Amino acid sequence: MTSATASPDDAGGVPDPRAALESALREIAETADPAALEAVRLRHLGRKGTLARLTARLRELPPERRPEYGRAVNEFKERVAAAADERMRALRPARPAAGHGFDWTLPGNWRGLGRRHPISRIVARTVEIFRTLGFTVAEGPDIETVRNNFDALNTPPDHPSRDPQDTFYLEDGRLLRCHTSPVQVRYMESHRPPVRIVAPGRCYRRDTPDATHSANFHQVEGLYVDRNVSLADLKGDLSYFAAQLMGPDVRVRFRPHFFPFTEPSVEVDFTCHVCRGRGCRVCKQSGWIEIAGAGLVHPNVFRAVGYDPAEVTGYAFGMGIERIAMILHGVPDIRMLYENDVRYLAEF
Ligand code: DAH
Image 1 (cartoon, helix red, strand yellow):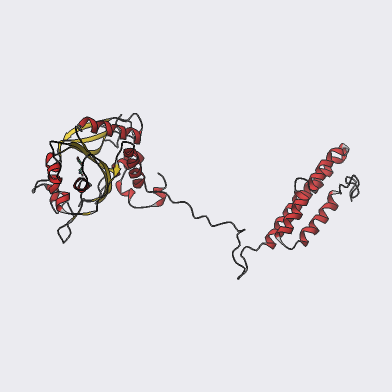
Image 2 (cartoon, protein in one colour; image 1 turned 90 degrees about the vertical axis):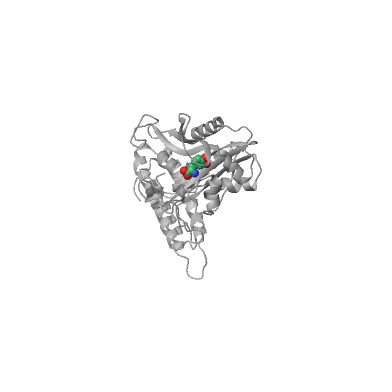
């Protein structure tokens, strides 16, 4: 016993810190299970426990005794906490003994959360935006007939895209669709107008892979058929889509083009997302990025599916999803989207 500490229980039942420490350590050593240990720990370190009472007493001591007393109280706190921790480890083995079942007090195994692939996320977001315009989702198979992929879409017999150099044919004469446009044919043949659909899906082309080409890629097809649908509807809807996807500053432009299944036909550019239209490497200094092919549905397509071109008009578009992913996330090489290196995909 030092001069700085009083004898045990000298003031209203408050014990001397050293004596209190000894008895607390003894009690801890004698506990037989975690619940008992927790009770002892709380009795000494809890809000109304021994420690609290010892601490409260500090103020009543003459100033010259306080430093020594304070040290003793700190020692009490640290050693009781450490002893309780150690005893807890001993009472609660790291593994339950064989045959003793599952120890739910152990921390779980963290496996990390997965996330959606950037392509899936852009498809989902695109669908969501067009839903707000009243579009629903349609789908078609990856293996298509020549009729749906080409003939019904007014593609002439000698059109280069039919060449086996460009399109994958199966032995039975069918093919892997080279665009999502055949979903238009399938949908119109099974539904009466008006039609408002978006059709996301995989497409296949015999392209040699490089930074901007892949033999397997994704498109979202759009089709809106009703009375008096015009190019202005197309531009309005695509402008709305662009603003929702990329922000309110993005602008949309149409360039005249040719597709067999539309007349007139356009290519659709958005202002470059990377440089906001000022000109950069991604947009080859032009400030614009090509996003889609589009146009007003050709009367021959309507005839092929049994619609009357004197009754209805419509617009259609086909957007490249990888294109959008590349400019939205600054991906320099399309192949990075398919290598499935999760360290890279986790960057998005
Ligand atoms: N199918 C075209 C392609 O893959 C894109 C396209 C152009 C789709 C015009 C359309 C359209 O629906 O109207 O390049």
